[in-house]
Image (tube, rainbow, N blue to C red; front, side, top):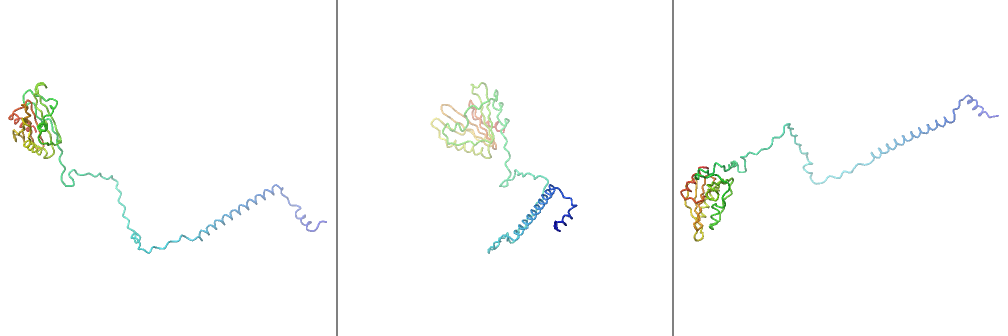
Length: 273
């Protein structure tokens, strides 16, 4: 006969409904997964708590001792910050420089006007039958003639503005023409050039049979000079120079005109200035 413990267990479980074995395995598997998740959460919390504790227990960086020298002025008191500039809604005006302003405080020089055609000799000034023609007629100036006779070297200043004109009568082969060059020079240079012309003529010593002289002066404009070059063998050249202000004109005629005709031509040239 079974013992008393077995009989009691049989009596209590006689009417119990037992679940299939497959359902018991599923329920056991779920319980195992839930327990593993719980254990993992507990471990994660423990690790985080441990890290925080270590961070709190770790000592901070050691501050080096202060230098014994005096602190820099910037460490004593902070420099006051400049107040912000007001913002402008309009664009800044461009900087302009007055034409009168300079390092010396003087006004700038006025613009130099050019030599116009109206300032040159006209056909009616030199005689009937002359017309304006192209070309300049080659070398004929005072500088050319003075160099040919071996006079002291000099130099005509460069003009600020200039113009040339040829007045011709008849055919080119007739060699009947008047050549003119007029220039405007920087202040005072035209007058200084004429002073040099006189000095060079007076100190010129041409070869035998040649000569140079001043035939007339101050007959036209503010200042005028008529220079006669004798190259020998009957070859003469008369160069007329007339100045008015900073304008200087130089005239050569062929055939060569006499002194009186050149003086008259000089006065007409000065009137055109």
